[in-house]
Structure formats: C-alpha cells, structure tokens
Length: 313
Ligand code: NDP
Image: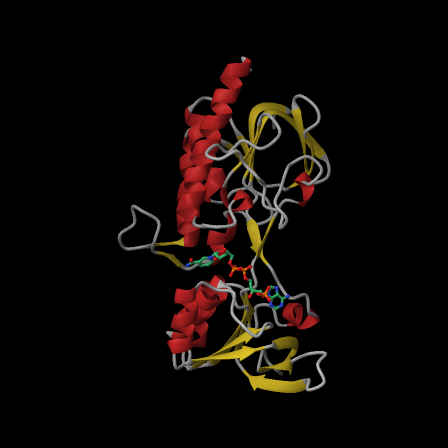
C-alpha cells in the first residue's frame, strides 16, 4: 500500500464508490478504505427499487458489489480498514487507519455515512437480531401477520410504521411526546391507518421474551404523578429515532451542525478545510438516499480534481 496518495476516500457506500469511479477516471489514482461496514447501509437492505437504471430493482449488496467493481475497474485501490484518526492541520493531510497505519494525502473525501440511533437500553443488545431492528424495509418481511412496535415520532418512524402496517397485523408507535414531529401528511397517514396505534407519552424501559422479543415494558407519562407502567405484546421492536453521522474523528477540524453533520459549502462538497470534501449521508441530514449520496460523491471527486489542478498537485 502507498504511504502518500493524491486522493483518499474514506467509506464505501454509494458516495464513496461514486467518488472513486470519478476520481479514478480522472487519473487521481484514489485509495479507498471501506470502513466498519463495507458497502455501507445498503448492504443491510434487501431490494433497492429506487436507484435509477434498475427497472426490476436490485439487491442492496449486489448494487454495492457492482459499484465496487466499477471503481476498481478504473484503478481505485480498495482496502479493508477504518479511519481512526485524522490530522487536517498539516500538508499533506494525514489519516490513520486502524490505529496504526498513517497515510498522507493531498485530498480527502469523507463518505463515512450515518448510523441509526438506538435508545441505549441493554435489551437492545440482548435481542439484537432477535426482534430488534433499526430498518423496517430490511427486516419487516419477518413480521408478516405479527405485532410490532416502532419507536419515534418523526418522518422516519411514520414511514417505517406505514411500511410495517402493510405486512404486520398491528403496529404500535411509541412516541415520547404528546405529539408527532413528522410532517402533516405523514401524521395524517399514520392516524388514518387502522392497523397503527400511537402510544403518546410512552417510553421504553425494557424488552422481554424467552426466544427473542415477545413484548416491551413501557412507562406512560414518566415522572408525572399519574405515571403508569404498560406492557405491550410484540414480536418486533423497530428503532426510528434518527441517525447519527459518523463524524467523531473529524470534530477537532471540521465545522458541523449541532447533530454532527459536516457542513459543506453548498453547492460544492468543500468543507472548511481546503482539500477536504464530504459527500453522502455524513453531510446530508435531509435526503439520505443512495442516489443523492452517489450524486454528492461525483461532485466531491470533481471538487478534488479541480483543487489538485489549481494547486498543481
Ligand atoms: P427526527 O429527528 O425528525 O425524529 C426523531 C424522532 O425520534 C422524534 O419523534 C424524537 O422525539 C424521537 N426520539 C429521538 N430520540 C429519542 C429517544 N431517546 N427516545 C424516544 N424517542 C426519541 O428523525 P427522522 O429520522 O424521523 O427524520 C430525520 C430527517 O429526515 C427529518 O428532517 C425528516 O423530515 C426527514 N425525513 C423525511 C422523510 C420524507 O419526507 N419522506 C422520510 C424520513 C425522514 P422528539 O420529537 O421528542 O424529539
């Protein structure tokens, strides 16, 4: 592996691989590190039906494998490994891989994506893969004619609840506030769906079950004089309480919003540090789609190429 490159791409979702395709075709000889979840969030999806060019849909892992092959075909070097530290105060920029190997690069394209948030209760780990999920479209299929709960009151939670209502017999929405945060149209849709029951002002204390999730212990109006314990019988427990961008290692150097999404200079992918670009979910709290991430990856590679040629690097 080279110790000094012109273009280093961190992350292997649609943004990372699209950046790699463009950067390698522009002769930047990019190196890409795949990160913790090679292929990114789409590898946990079954069918992708909204990526243009696939009228019959394509499986998430297959789509990512195709993007990887396309990037490698034009010369991108793809390695396993996770960026564990960066130093953007020096030139060339420095990125540490797996806490041991330092690579220097003239440009860095950050495509580290975002991860679903969890409540942080021990039972989420205990029942991981046994009824706890953060992706209804990935796992909903297993709950046909069953009972499930979705935690959250935003657009994602409504979308997941509606999707699950198409499969399951009963869908609870566990909402901690007395109202939903979702857009009006989504609120209307969930309220009009006879299979969905919204449990306002409820919080999850734990899960129970012998072989996987069989129910949840909830508390209604926690901390109020009329606080009440409520148990519900469910087979699946879906988290939809937002996403957390994977940006911890960049905090010292890059400007971010209050949640941690990297700020870019719209409509470019430039960050506040010259030569560092961000693309995909890591810089996109709004759209978070494979195709928008791919588009941003393309822009990041073009931005990197122009930066390198302006600087004569
Ligand atoms: P949001 O941040 O909008 O909503 C998160 C929800 O989870 C809120 O109801 C929040 O409650 C709740 N929540 C957060 N933490 C906890 C916790 N610890 N315990 C219980 N509940 C919790 O995230 P979304 O992922 O729903 O949406 C993100 C963005 O993406 C939004 O801008 C949204 O509009 C957009 N989006 C748009 C879609 C569309 O238009 N089709 C589809 C999906 C997303 P509280 O309100 O109390 O904070």
